[in-house]
Length: 234
Image 1: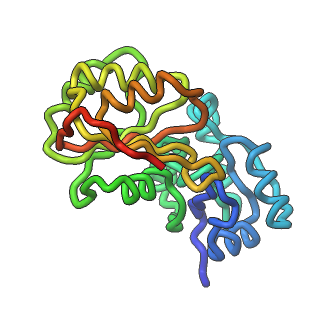
Image 2: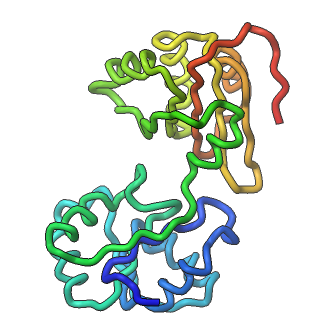
């Protein structure tokens, strides 16, 4: 199997058994691994019994290090790009480097593999034939306008959220989108404490106001509304 000069390698979002055989092959074959956090990547490599040189490329240094990364890739035959979890470029660092490689004529290959929103969307029970992936909302500037835009969409909406802003986002969804809108809030996809709350935005807000909020979240927002009645969750 001939490999591209830059191979984008998705990594498990929780369960290490989700690594693909093809991803393992690339990590074994490459000369260099460009990682979001070298400590996280080394844990995965140790689990796989792989020893490779790993260098850091993350949101805090990607602009400053971009040209240097391009040079390293050009000087190598095969380089793997990974993030801490999931597919690089999907709400994770990687886009700038991938675009720069394309502009420099570097051959790129992206392996299929784990990403949090796909299993969350499929397991939500909310229509997935048409959906809009928003990812993380802006923290401050432009946040309200984005919520208003999402409220007007005639399809399922997918959001990412941290445990620190989950309640704020649910509160704002209730205001701008509507408290009766159907939602599934999934956390810790593929991990031991994976959980899916299914109900209305108001019901989700009430639920998460009364539990400890931990983990990373995917919010699947339906265009449909629900009556305000209790929903069983598991």
